[in-house]
Image 1 (cartoon, rainbow, N blue to C red):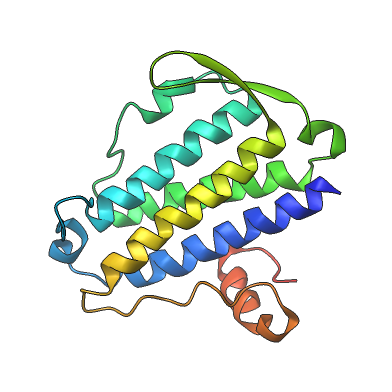
Image 2 (tube, rainbow, N blue to C red):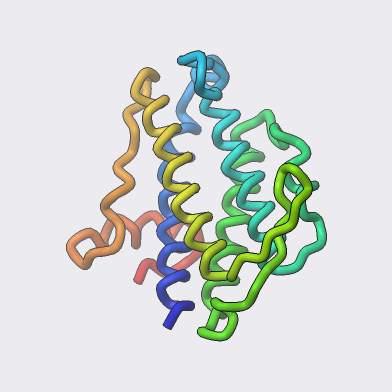
Amino acid sequence: MPGTSFFHQARNNAWSNHRLYGVCERLTIQELDTKRTPFSASILETLNHILTNDWYYLDALIDGGRGRACLADEMPSATLGKLAAAQRDADMRLMAFCEQLNDKDAIRSIELTREDNSKTLETVGDILSHLFVYQTHQRGQVHALLAVTSQASPPLDDYHLDYDAPMPRIDFSSLGRKGA
């Protein structure tokens, strides 16, 4: 059933964001704001980018009506605490959306307005698949940027197997959701 698969991906997404923010919260302001290469954003800019893209796709999925306005402010939060709270809220809303998803919903078409104002039709399942891959890629960027800070990058791959179950259960208890 698509809902179950997407829910697990949404849950992994929330877990990974939670772990990543847990490390980022221990960084100095300078470590958060420093651009380390000419082609990369700072850690704080990348985390804001992840959030605004979550808002954009989630808005489309729930027919929220904001569209590209979700992306208008590239830095909706200059402080990590407010950003972490907003990301946690987006993650919880995405999990709730995926939890109720069924086969019919997964193939429903959604209209997306692209950067050039063109419109495309995509299925809910395709949007979710894109979003989860995009999230993984962007978190990977932050993961790489953390390598040159005072904090070690958190493991983000120990999530779904029974062998790894104690780790996500511990983290999800702090998110207010059950681990298994």
